[in-house]
Image (cartoon, rainbow, N blue to C red; front, top):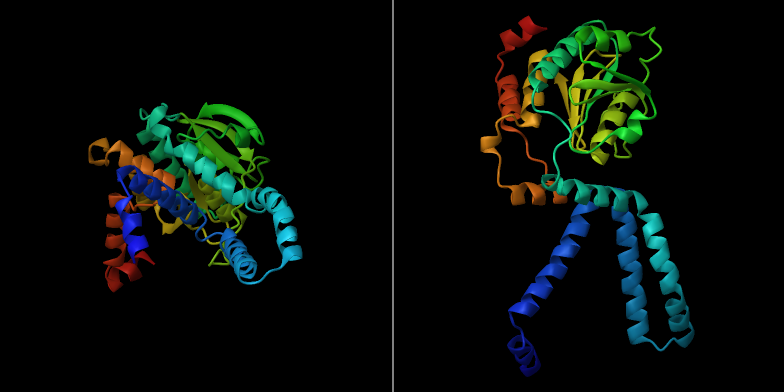
Length: 302
């Protein structure tokens, strides 16, 4: 008991800060890998290390200790290889967390017109069951993905989007990337998400929309070719079964046109670093309005 008391007496504010920083590092690492395929691998590594530590401290095993010491360098090399997707996602998230250090890549001027055009085009394509995947670039550049498609550099119009995603069009099989309120490229190839999809009816367009929003801060709008439903993906999450009006509301909420209600910059930085996803107020109001729809109104809408 006296040793414990002496240990606490030697603690000062610098030691507490040191312990707090180490705990924060472990918390961030565990938070970044949660709900990913790295969780069972990390659990297995921890269990293996605990078993090895118990055997090394309780039993005298010279050969086993020698083998473990020689295996540590190989283990340090194997960890980045095994956890490569998670480490890359974590580093990209850390890089996006410093968005306040740079100027944004998208222009606030004219975004209202682009949102109206996208909502109108998605409504018409949903009525005709034409599949579509539209990606709006934000702070993170999408140049690598734009290089996989056909460069256009054209004004965003409803007619252009409908023409691109027409079934007989050569450019319909892929994604359209919009940068600075202009169509940058079409027929672009996007990364597919490796997360578990609870709804098997969601196809490659939905997986690509979630995948690009997991890797970047872009916003992806999807029109299902099979069901004619409109969905929007952001930050690795998807909101489905939207109409044109709700799509427009959600897009405006994601672009946060009302900057006055935004939290301080350091809170936004911490949220972006930890991947904390907050539901925009406009989205919540839209969802609440949808849930409060009367049965007769639902029947009329159907």
